[in-house]
Image 1: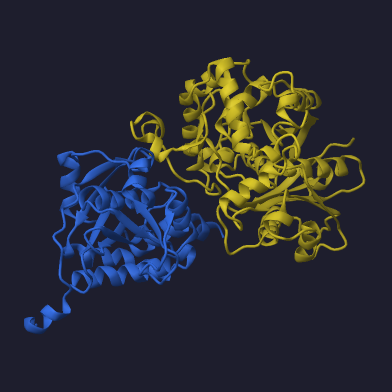
Image 2: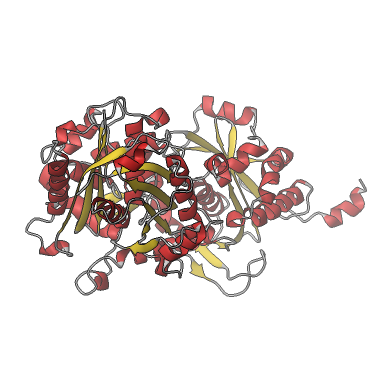
Length: 230
Length: 394
């Protein structure tokens, strides 16, 4: 690699505070570890994202395709100041969220992908990335948009987000803002998690990011019984 | 009245079924019921479709005519029956009476609803159209809100707690895991929905004191039964299940006009009529499907139908008496809470489950040696209720 040219191609980086891992007890009683991953994890994460590209339901294909590109771009130093959080239950990857810093004050929420559905995993992970923007990166506001009706309901309605002028970088749909004030007003209601993560849970999560088979991922998203009984 | 039996049943899995229209689902459930019975080329005299609001949900009416055409059952008579969330039960009642009267010999009853075509708040609003337009709806009341107020009163009067409600939710979601037709296939725990300090984030308030896991999902689905005479049933494939009794009763449309809003008089009267017609008592029932659109309703209905004394339904759930394997299994299908509640389909689906139970075809959720089954379909907020007693003949 020609590093002389590469330094022009790579975006400059702000120093970013790390996200401290936490554990969330789900409705099933399962313990989901939420933690930040670095670029080394991206090839593994992409294995889980790839199957979603064939699922039109709830815009999984668009979210999957964009997330794939964003993660790849981050891993290969083509996206500025991105971070990625994952949710794992017993090591198994159940969701991914990513986001980036536009400036020290403003965050840009990118995507939320729930592989396991019906447990508010997407909502928990989205809340976690907002927590990172506001509490650990100490930003003033996060700009958010939604590609699916579910996303719109979860983010814009549940958080009562504030409509903003201009465009979100994900295609120009109306952006909404989560301010520090709004985040803290909603925190008790929407942001879950306990710290520190018990060492035995953290050890399992860090040992390996387990990816379900393609078939399992599709069944988790689409529903298994449909195939069995249709 | 001549005796009436059910010879065939069928369902489509309840879930969000984006790819299917309402009539697609009704047709598949109906074909399964006819195939289950082994009806062959024998004509169907009439078709009754239980459906609450296809005009609002799907911009389609005359669904019974559409179903007859789809199944090529012409010139069978066809009617859509609307009685809110008890439309499925009312459709079965109409089929039952038509055969019992001797006017028709073979009647197909299908119940169905496609609710996920609209967004959640719109679905809630459409369902709220069953409330009194001037006394309730205009003030913004929804069915979850009504159930919330009912639950609060019931808690105050009978000592029901949120833990009891969670017991119902956990039980029915456990049962749903055993039912491949159930919308919600997920085990939940008391820690995850109630006792953990952050359980309120997993299980937010919907209408205090009811939380998310106290409420049924919004589902698409259809179920069907084939009703006929014992004589014709003998020539068909499956052992007939007798509709031994039914009852229907109404109450004031608004809760506020009732002497005691916690007293579900229509449930009591409908159940009593059904038991009287069948010549049995609540204690003779082996398995029951109750209308648990909200967890509090399973407890209240189990008392008003006569299975437990007032104030003892919650303890019955807590003791495990209503689990599969308990003294009186309630909602082995998962109930509305887990199987789902496509409003027009529910009353029919309850009867389908009872037929499977009484035939011994309920798989992992089979109630052992079930001979008498009871279903309760709760229309409005308890203002138009249907109850059925089904019996497996020895």
